[in-house]
Every structure is written in structure tokens, then in C-alpha cells.
Amino acid sequence: MKEIEFLSEISAKDDGKKIAMHGWVKDIRDLGGLKFLLVRDRTSEVQVTCIKGKTSEKIFSKVSNIPRESAVRITGVVKKTNKTRSGVEIIPIDIDILAKSESPLPLDMVKESSVDKRFDNRFLDLRRRKNTLIFIIKSKMFKYAREFLDKKGFIEIQTPKIVSVGAEGGATLFPLVYFDKEAYLAQSPQFYKQMMQSAGFSKVYEISPAFRAELSHTTRHVSEFISLDVEMSFIDGIDALINLHEDLIIYMFKKLKENDGKELTELGIDIKIPKKPFPRMSLKEVEKFTKKHASISVGAELGTEEEKLLGELVKKKYKHDFVFVTEFPWSARPFYHMKDGNITRSFDLLYKGLEISTGAQREHRIDILKKQAAERNISEESLKYYLQCFKYGMPPHGGFGTGLERILEKLLNLRSVKEAILFPRDPDRLVP
Image (tube, rainbow, N blue to C red):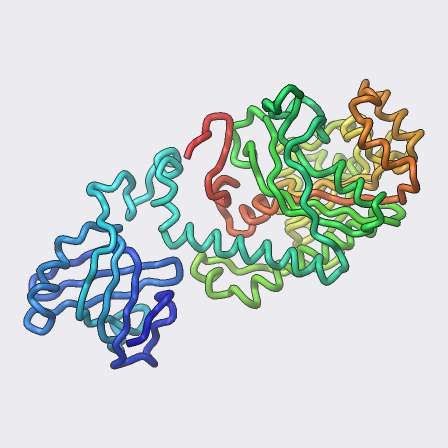
């Protein structure tokens, strides 16, 4: 007997073979003398066919009493057929209920339930094929990001998520009890990945959670998300960062299209591989480009509606889903960004009208860095350990942080970034 680990392993080549498989009961159809059991796992669905007079009476009567979403183990014989999507059906020899599901279910597994009900019962919601596919693709996307950066000579690092000072400002920090000290959840690994440039690592990246205490109830904001942070030494401006970022996006998309086409097709997604160079505009150029449609004030960040509009206009004019926005004013950027006059060497990357990345060349000269911190009323004492590494040969450097789940949201045409997170956190949701 062949032991099946995943249902996708079963094919017409197994015709006539005895197998043992396991999964969850998605549906039961009782047509009197004919009963069908649809069993699913994360990879596929397989039909179990029970025929009165041919299937044992014990199994035939047992099928109708199995609650939906129960975990089962089934032994049977594979039969080739053109009546099922998988091209096979299983003629059962024995059905063992491993864990009976309660009934009724707290979530309608056929019709779409409300968002709150879905997330309250996320363990069941994730059994839906569409949701399972989202996280299979997410896993692959993370893999390809690592693969690309590894090939480029980057070292993956892991930095603390309990910190004494915020990297993005104090307004969005989550405070926590840390013995007798003041501490926070990390907004990003920014300071640490810069320290690694002083340590001589030259090229580093981290894929890890980040936390932002933003009181936002939107489709793009969550309190905890996964960020891909990249930092590299010996750069002269932001061109090297932008080129790297373009290559990273193209690599991930190509790999997904080449290796995961089946999953994408199931979701109705046809990935368009973006071409280099991506469109690039300064903030002043964005204002001119959009002035007929909206008012964008130079000196401020782009708002949600401006980003959406810019994405639509770029798509129309350049036939491109991506656009880099550059030359943000220093007043709108963190103190550690390098600046030329009042303009920073920084950028945002928008994908389909949504900001997915922010990057910059950092200020590596300690005297200027201290001055910029003072201008923001940030005390040297609070930056003591951060500034220390700038005293001993800190090279010119820069990097970017990317919201991988935002990329996934737009790539798969999801309604919200929360759909790309297993158990999303926002101002109203702390469980499950």
C-alpha cells in the first residue's frame, strides 16, 4: 500500500493502486445509491466515491454521518476517471475519523463571511483553497528574495526586536515592560543594520517583524508586519540602491512566474514582469505630472489618494506598475538621511499606487549626523550606542525597507494587506 503525504501526489498513474491518504472533509453529497466525499489538504482535493452494493455497507452508512471539516484517514483504490478535476477518484476500503468536527461550523466554508468572522475563525478560514494559495506563494516569494540577495553577496542578519529607542520616531512606538527599563518593540532594524556597516559586513539584509503603533483603520496599515530590510556600504547616491531594488523585484516575479504558475493560475493571476528602468520622478516632477488631477504639496509625503492617482497615471503613460519617487524634503524624512541642502537622497517605491518601499543614502559623517539629530531635538544620550559606531570608520552606506506583504497584496489583487498576513494585528484586533 502506498502512503500518501499530500493529495497532489495522487494521479492517473496510480490507477488500480491501493493507497492511504489523509485530509479534511470539505463536502459530502448524498445521492441515495451514490455518495461522494470531497477530501482536501493544502495541496489539492480528491473525491472519494461510495457506491451502494459495491462499497461495504459499514463505510456506505458511515459517510453521511461525518461532519464537514473533520480530519480523516482513508484507505482505498485509485480509479482513473474523466469526471473529476484531478482525473482520479478513490474507491474506499476503510474510513477512519481522526478528529470529528463540531457542527454547526462557526464559519460558512462555502459562502464568503464577514471580515471579522473570518479573522475570528482564521484557522478555518485558512483552509479555503484561495487563502492557502496566498501563503504558499508568500512563502515562495520570501524564498526568492533570500535567494536573490544571497547570490548578490548579502549576509542575512537577525537584530533585536526589543529596543531602547525608535528608529522612525516616537509617535508610533509600542512601549513595553522590560524589567526596570523603558523599552519598545522595534519599528525597524534600521540602526542595527547601519551598525553592521561599521562592523564591516558591507551587505546585509533581514526579513523580520516590525511594529508600528498607528491608529489607522485602512486596507494598507497593520500594527505588525514583515519587513525586508537591506543595507549596503560604499555607495555614492541612491542609484545603486534603486538598481538593486529593481533587480530584486524582477527576480522575485520571474521566479514566481516560472516555478509557481499553477498556484497563480488557480488565483487567476498572470504576473507581468516589469522592465528596467522603472519610471523615476522627483517629488517636484510628481507635482507637475499630477497637477491637472490633484494638488500635491511639495514638502510633504504623498498621501494615500495621491499615491493611488500617481500609480494610475504612470500606468497610463509609461505602461508600468512601478514608479520611484525621489528627492523628498528633509523635513519629511528621518534625521539620519543624507541631504543636499533641504532635499534628501531618498526614495519611495510605489507598486500599483501603493508605497511598498522607502530607501535612502544615510548620513555617515558623525559631526553632521549629530547636528541633524539636534535639529530634530533628539538627544545624543538617547542615541549613544548608535552614534558610537560612527566614530571608527563608518563607510558611506544606504539601504531600503520593503513591505513584502504589501507587494503580495498588489500582486495577487487582494482587498487588504491583512489578507496576506496569517493573524493580522490592527488597533482593534489582538486575537487570535
